[in-house]
Image 1 (cartoon, helix red, strand yellow):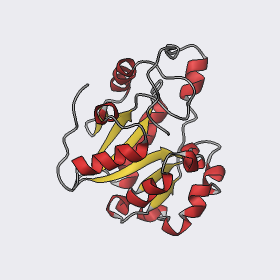
Image 2 (tube, helix red, strand yellow):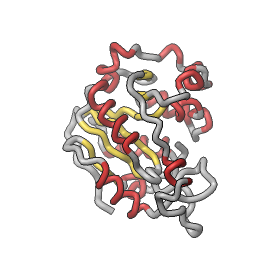
Image 3 (cartoon, rainbow, N blue to C red):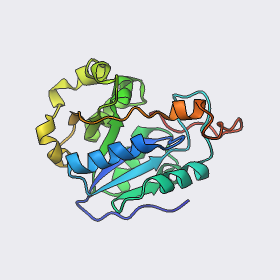
Image 4 (spheres, rainbow, N blue to C red):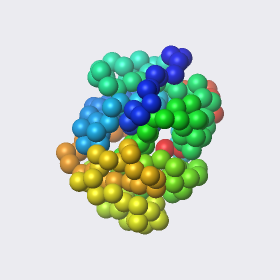
Length: 211
C-alpha cells in the first residue's frame, strides 16, 4: 500500500472510485473532463479491492494499481489504494472515513451516468447523496436511464445546472450535476471479454465496494 494522499485544507478533490479492471482511456477521459468542467484541484482514483455488486473478484489490486499508473500520468491525478487502507467495504463508509481524515477538504464523488442508473442499489445511497456533492458524467446510451433513475427523481430538487458545475465542490449537499459532452464507449467488461486483461482470480478476497 502506498499510504494516504496529502491534501491541504480547502482543496477541491474529485473521487473516482471503481475496480479499474482494467483501467482504460475512458477513465482518463472523464478524469480530465471533471478537472476542467468542475474546477477541481485534484482527482483521486480510488482503486477498490472489489465490487459487492459483482459476483467475481477482480484482478489483484497490485496489478490494477500498476496499470492505472501507466495509463493516467497527470500532475493533478493521484492513483490510490486508500479504500484498502481504510478498510472500507462500501462507498458510504469510504466517504465517511475520508471526511473524518480530511475535514477541510471539499470532496466531489464522480460517477458515470451508467452508475447513476443503478445508484439506488448502492448501500446507503441516500446517505451518500446527502453528504457529498456528486458529478455524473455522460456515458453512451446511459443518459436517458440516468435521468429517469430513482436517484435522479429522488434528488431532482438538488440538481445543479451544468453552467454552475464549477461551484459544485463548494455546494452544500445534496447537490449533483449531469455533465454532457464528448463520450467514450470503452468498457472494462469488453476488454476482459476480448482476452486483453488477466482473468479475475478465483480466490479473490471478499468484495469491498458497491459501485
